[in-house]
Image 1 (cartoon, rainbow, N blue to C red):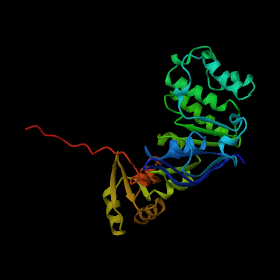
Image 2 (cartoon, one colour):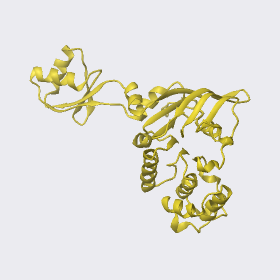
Image 3 (cartoon, helix red, strand yellow):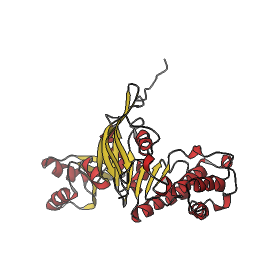
Image 4 (cartoon, rainbow, N blue to C red):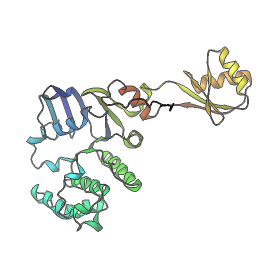
Length: 310
């Protein structure tokens, strides 16, 4: 099976424990979002999976074996960790050609992945002339070069324009539909919500969540209803008698915390109060993520203070 399996993984740098007894698996056929605050251990974990660092204890395997034990590893695992790593004096095509030859891959794959990444027209240009978004595309092309069953991407949307973001989103979904294992680290919550099926969340090196996306959001949401009515004063009074508070949300809309649309609709109908809008609200991925990681964030900005001149 082309899965990533982390078992009791720990990595210490001196007195700092960057990864702390992690255990989770990344399964094929879905896109797994890998989330966590700065310093949570995401990049360290990915480096341990790829054999770029050695664990202090525990194991990280791909397809049941350590990465270092794989023959022709690019045929099994493709990764983008740093889009700036490619040698700037090489052309895009020669960069990919060197990878192909060094890993005994068909050289025909070079033009195939250049085309898939939208870089065919600039394949003969030197990488140092590339924008960050173009370097990201080249890094993704390199990750796909061996047609691997496992793909790891660290911040793949970084530097991409809107068209590029849509492209990488659809690419990740397609790879998962093909039965591949896709692990994507990102700080962009709204973007992650558009492609991830499953979430693994770290905080201070520890596992905070390993769950499907809908369950994660539901588990960190509080019931809330959005409502619009022609008679808010009357609705407020009726709801107050039932233990609910009608709060203003702006633009003629109101909210009721700790209730469902079914409950509020029944109360309004019983009192004959017309409703123009009634809907359950669910927390966004960003809201759910912030609720979970509030105590696991290593770096936080101080609240702004106002200074009054004398």
